[in-house]
Amino acid sequence: QPQLQESGPGLVKPSETLSLSCTVSGGSISSSNNYWGWIRQPPGKGLEWIGTIYYSGYTYYNPSLKSRVTISVDTSKNQFSLNLSSMTAADTAVYYCARLAVTTYIDYWGQGTLVTVSS
Amino acid sequence: DIQMTQSPSSLSASVGDRITITCRASQVISNYLAWFQQKPGKAPKSLIYAASTLQSGVPSRFSGSGSGADFTLTISSLQPEDFATYYCQQYSTYPLTFGGGTKVEIK
Image 1 (spheres, chains in turn brown, cyan):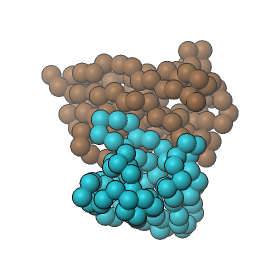
Image 2: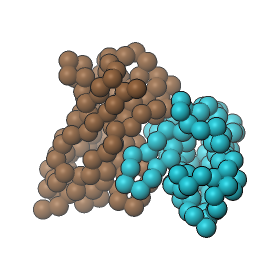
Image 3: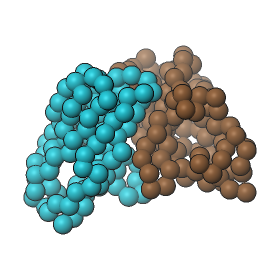
């Protein structure tokens, strides 16, 4: 089964851009059967979908974050990445990367990484 | 956006109990409904997709049902490892949206 691992800074300053990567092992990110996505969870709260990407680069973003989000894929590294600009305290959350089946249900999750926004 | 409403938001139950969690979508989503289990400090785990299909390795005491806008997750005989928070999620339409969660606690 695939494994997904998030990496990136645990602390970001307000107004800065968050950059996270998700490395996929045990499967190819170029599979035509899968999408790849980012989901976040503020401390003590529920889950929020951020966006999804296909290996070809086609993306879907949550409209609530669309102006600040960029998701990209690097097939040579079997990775995909999240950039979220203009970070505020409200963006403090655990960020998860995930694999989605072609019908877009989530089947595998990364372990998550806590990102805190603070000066 | 499609709103997903779960009920109850929390429940207390004993080992061996049968419990049911309800998820209602604000519009028809056919059977594009998934369920996840999350334990404290851990990533969610995928349990069910297509409203009623168990992910590989998920115990058969878990079952899902429903279609259209109303769905249920049932645990037929609650085990100690089942105490967790459960989320539903629709994948019929972007943006993908989650329910608010149901926390299952030990009575």
